[in-house]
Image (cartoon, rainbow, N blue to C red; front, side, top):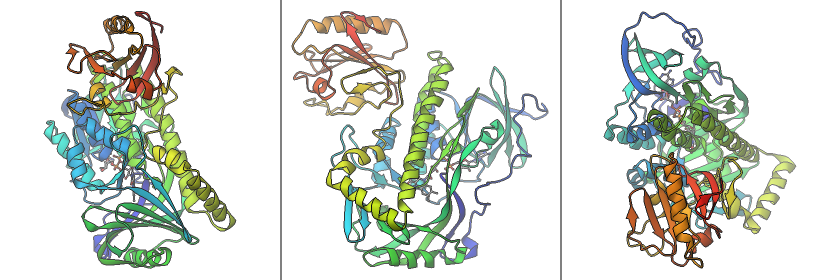
Length: 560
Ligand SMILES: Cc1cc2nc3c(=O)[nH]c(=O)nc-3n(C[C@H](O)[C@H](O)[C@H](O)COP(=O)(O)OP(=O)(O)OC[C@H]3O[C@@H](n4cnc5c(N)ncnc54)[C@H](O)[C@@H]3O)c2cc1C
């Protein structure tokens, strides 16, 4: 997780405390860990699978569902005896919702969650609003809130429906790897066992055993403040479908609604608070910082955290990878940790599946590492800026308020902050290729395909096991381009590496589909115009909807 929990508790005192670990250090497992090339070979061989995922948090579960759906044999182990009911993360942004759609889990997720229409920042008398209504390029314009335990439940059900079963009570204590695979050492009910796999992915959270075994550093720092969360029923007149940030001189207060009539109060504190005073402290600070009356009704579930920003210097060593909080932890400002981890998983699953099928080489994992480290670094930096913004005092907070007001007046918050927060604007550096508004490294915007009976969107046509060629025929005024673009498509498909081609053309009847080439009618050239494409162009769209490369099709021959 992106924060190191000090204490979680309910209003009832000590008995409800379920986790207590030294701040910033985690459990000291170094003496038990082994990540050598050798090791005793005395344990029973337990089983062989293609991938072992360590950790059944949201990232491990999402990776597991994705791999099973792609036909990869995967085990998920978790050292906890069962899944836990506590809610850490709440916010799921549009890009994560797109990921849930690709996993086939968007409906159960949306059924249980609450839509957030806007973020509101209260600067004394002035209120600044970041709205999501004008977000473009995704069918999910609004974020939602859902307790992390419920998000995990949806993913766990998806994993089971795809034929998997999380192995709880199974701890990874060490591993070795060689050219052929990984040998994991497990502790199952106090007994040691061994499991072999082609790859091992550590989705085992901030104190990752896998990361420690690899000897990978986790550079960064802790923030001086503590953050307190208090979930429960809060009586207040604040709008339910908005998240409210009160930037008071004594620190930040965030109030977010949850499904089921509950809300989370989240606040920054300068001091440590004893476990039995968390609920009272939340109540007191909420009342002091909120500009309208607010009062807790009934029991609160509380937790207090030290916040860190850290990133692993490597996400991959040979056949062992780390993802999610094991690889990067952020401040909860911006609510990006789980969302970013889900993207790590989505970008990894199709690559591991492609390697298994012999369609991709292991070099694709270096690309994954490069790209995900780039994203993690920018998310850590963004949430660091937001955390500092929350915790500014004196003249600096006055300056912040002036800057926020100016950004609000010019519409910059809706135009730039909302898409970035929604993670839709996050992009990899790519290879520099571009055409019109599309460039390598960015996420392909999802747009409705107007006039189709099936009300399909562009992403419905490009999600596949292997990268897809999206071909813009640009034949609105030059009909003869269609045939040459088709020929170009066949040549590219013949080279291999692509699942299929999707051709956007002015002239194709909507129903036209043939093996490996789906065609989308763009009679008025609207989609071409939207993306600024004027010449025949090929766009390589990866299974996670990011653009791998863009190139112009010259005649029937691709120019690159
Ligand atoms: C108060 C709070 C609010 C947050 N709000 C948000 C938000 O709104 N949006 C957002 O995106 N993020 C948020 N986050 C961050 C989010 O909770 C984390 O990013 C997310 O939990 C990371 O998921 P994960 O699967 O990587 O790791 P985890 O959830 O930490 O799961 C790791 C799993 O690995 C298991 N494990 C560990 N070691 C081993 C081992 N050796 N063997 C076997 N199993 C092992 C653990 O038991 C655990 O189940 C918040 C965090 C906190 C604390």
